Length: 434
Image 1 (cartoon, rainbow, N blue to C red):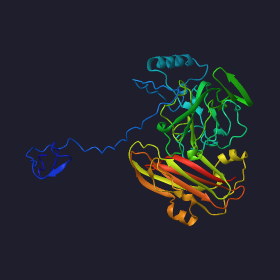
Image 2 (cartoon, helix red, strand yellow; image 1 turned 90 degrees about the vertical axis):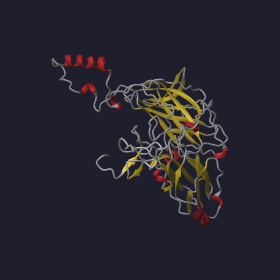
Image 3 (tube, rainbow, N blue to C red; image 1 turned 135 degrees about the horizontal axis):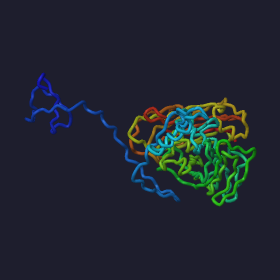
Image 4 (cartoon, rainbow, N blue to C red; image 1 turned 45 degrees about the vertical axis):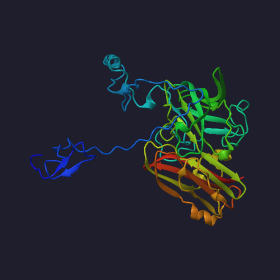
């Protein structure tokens, strides 16, 4: 400061920010005090957390102290420096390993190598639990619906795995859950939830339908056929390391959204393979599966007008919602819907239009754009909407129509929301001839 008194940053408390002066004294008469170091970057404002409704059958237990960090390594600790089997140094090495555990606590290697369960709801047929997922994560093949059937009388395993829910009718839900760990898992909790159509799933919008319990063998346990299991805490069909579980409570989707709700299943074992109560993200956690698919079966033309909520951002951010028009072969779930690995659906040859209306406040009325002529729709609809997300709840309307559907025609649309460039939610729509 004494070397060059020509310009000094002023840090007087009377200023809201840093001001440059050319004298050793501020205009207010106080001495100039240079800041102690470079100014920190501005902090991003945080959105207040949304209110979380109390779910039936659950209790929030406050935890005063967070759990300790688990020591882990990239290789199994029991293989590091291990002497040759049968050598004279094997017993001293083992004694030292036990002493290390007594002094410093256990050290764990890669999760897949530990004697622990590794529970999973798949996002696709090839999913083995790696997260985060790069790609479509909201079309889980492990969530099934038996329409028009009360849970009290439904079979333990549905006859088909690709049925569509019926609005204002009882529907029974099922989940296909997996254990890829080296240890079996007992009393695994399987939770079933429904959400209004959304591009941002969170606990605040969750509606618990029911929960079931299941036992799973380790990943080496494989039965040749499905085996019915009955315990005091539930019934299910099992093939050892994986099982199909029936939700014990019927689900009646409301007609307000035409039955096009989002379904989420969570699977966890509270001690050996736990899950955060606030975790509902299928892209980030293998314990969560999402079924966000709306199937419109109609005689030509097939149309849909659907409001999609955008969830709750952690902080204000730039958002982007876009629509992609995809071939039916890109959607694995259509194999379940058709009951065949080669369903043979074709892309419609007739006119197809789809797009988004500008974002609006949550709960706004959805305009019936699909009823307008196709020429008018192309003017009003956009394939991509960019806007700034504030902390307030918002929604966006999706519209699609296909005017000349033929038998075995199917058109797939996928809507994605990105916040700060990252995909945070998605929803799929299929137009198909009845």
